[in-house]
Image (tube, rainbow, N blue to C red; front, side):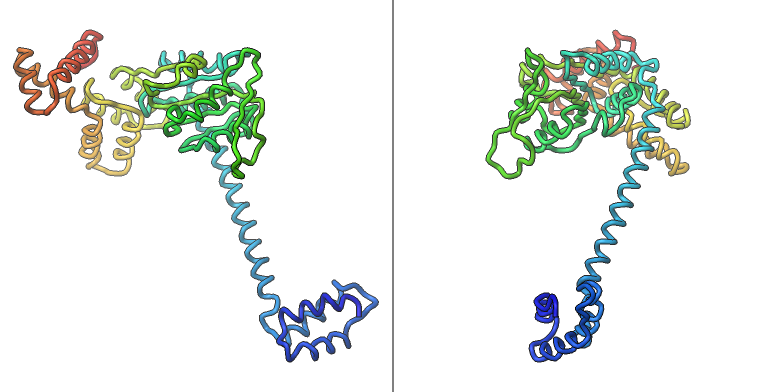
Length: 372
């Protein structure tokens, strides 16, 4: 009987010792040497099941598991495809310049870093919720650059090795690093950025020397892409050589700039003007406003009925610079700077220096004509 060794192997796995000889004889009687093993296999399996009803269940379980995994993978791919389409639609509706000079000037910087042959690195920073990410991605979309094909967005936390892998995997793309924790505080990552962003001969060789088996790509390569880093701030002790290689743009919004920006965003997202009107009427220069505050209050307005204004006040209170508000209030109350300073120190526990720094900020704000 052909393939008897395979049949014996199957019997050893699925049939008890005392039944194997009889099972083999039954198979031998029904086995047809004129056809293939695969064609004989249903007969072999039928006989094995006479002695072990569990035969084949493990294989069926594997098939079912594989089918489930394939289905989940297909569902995930469809979800990601749909999410990407929705994302593309959302950034297509963003006016990258609009009437805000901050975005117009930022777009000029983006244009340079994307198209220049010798500038490959841009750092855009400013407080959270000022539209850095949305405006960057909208610009890339406007330039007909496709997500995943021409550019990628990376955020969260990265180890140096993960950062190196990303540089390699997207070495010919625009990589947008958005709010990467402690990016500029890691010496190894800064070293990789130095190599990836400038070389006098424009051959930007990036290397990662390690004996770790976790390195899954070549230990050196030529990076030909562009890097855009978006963050809330840059550390004061940032590597000066790295900073010199970057175009830098700071998003600075005065209080009135932010209110104006909120009206634009509200129009784009379909928020009622009453939401921005409420924010405008219940804040002043010592509130640190951003678009996330607007989004939160717009949702209160939509879903919380008559309670939305109370919840909105609580939200605005979180954005209030209490010390700045206190200094302004005390200066209004006392008139005399020394009296106001003394009261501030007693009430806040902060220093005289803090008082005068805040006072200077108030004076500059008033000089600029900002609503108080």
